[in-house]
Amino acid sequence: MSASVPQTPWEAISRPGFLLGSWPWRSAGHLFSSMLLAAPFSAAATFAAVEAAHGRGVLPLIAAAALFTSVGPLAAVPLARWERRRLRLVDLRPILSGHREPRDAGLPRRLLARYGEAATWRELGYLGVLAVTAPAAAVVPLLILLWALSALVGLVMVLSGETPVTLLVVEVETLTESLAYALGAGAALLALPYLVAFLAGLHVRAARVLLGEGRGGGLRSELVEVARSRARLVNAFEAERRRIERDLHDGAQQSLLGLTLQLGLARLDIPPDSPAAERVETAHRQAKELMSELRELVHGIHPRVLTDRGLPGALGELADRSPLRVAVDAALPGRPPDSVEATAYFVAAEALANAAKHGGGTRAAVRAWWRDGLLTLEVEDDGRGGADPSAGTGLTGLADRVAVIDGRMLLASPSGGPTTLRVEFPCTLEHPPSE
Image 1 (tube, rainbow, N blue to C red):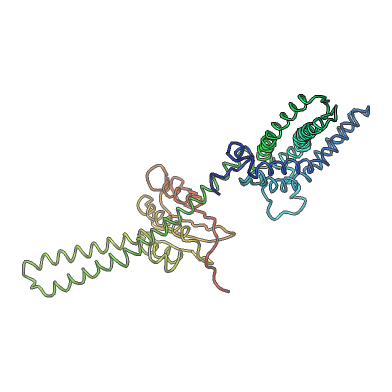
Image 2 (image 1 turned 180 degrees about the vertical axis):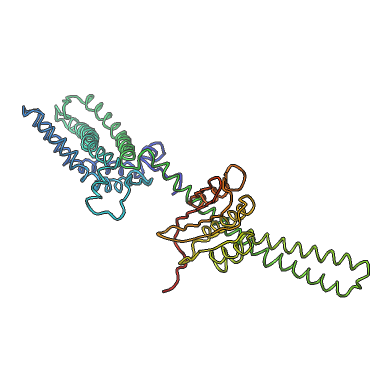
């Protein structure tokens, strides 16, 4: 929605053309429908107050308060749900409920959850405020309207010679008095839409405080948006990394392979004892070394085996390339999302590299399993232990990388070993096997 469109009555008041727009009518409709909605609750509160005032003591008030506190939430929650929809008449901004829906809960647990939520008691407070203020907020503009209309009618009656004329509580006998009241009535009618919009704006402010998510609602919404933005960035980064890996593998690597073959053929055509033969051989050796380095670079960006065979196959290749004797147990019933799969692979690669470089062990075990929406990867080695994330072994970077996709990392590395690194990722399998 365009930012130039007023979202609330208070914003509309300051805009030109307010009197010719729809906001006065929308505000009036909201105020008077609020009065009708609050009428039963206002009548009950008034009855209890009258009973107490007529010598029956405070027992009616106590009974009404107890009934309001005990049963009121059952009425306040559905009423608040309706009020959030009705509020759209005078507030174009979205308003979210502060309730958290209990999962897999029966009616008794749902009721207990509702009575234990702060949002329920804010909505009950809104019900009380509505019962007290809504009739007054609607009656005041009505009285002003009736008085203004009676003043204008009174002027007509005075001009026709019918005096005195009663304007609600004031009697008018002369044309001068009647004309003065008529001018005041005209000014009141012009100001009345602004008063109605102001009162509707007050209702909007109170409703947003009592019917919304509460003090932490804005922060919670911002955190949700941050999490979504972070997920989009992770997906974009993963897609870009795959594109670079594909370009290097299918472009630069293939070109370098062709160059290596051409240099190899050139060696066969040049006499072995010629000066050029040594330079061609050197170039051929450097090309092969560069080929190996490029292959390692491509593998570090995103290993082809991870794309082709998934996480179990990539972990098996890691075990074959590791200087340690690595046992792999990674029977997954499907494939996790790409970002989770890549992160789990690089965690395993970094853990095995740390074990070989810093741990001083000879054996390691890599296990991966998925259960109840949680992918768990565990790497254990028989090294000396004592791994410290602050010692520059890359563990802090791993923890940050895992946290980016809402995972968590656990490390157990007592002095003397063994070291166990576990990461957990909440995810669903994207490609479950067909039954």
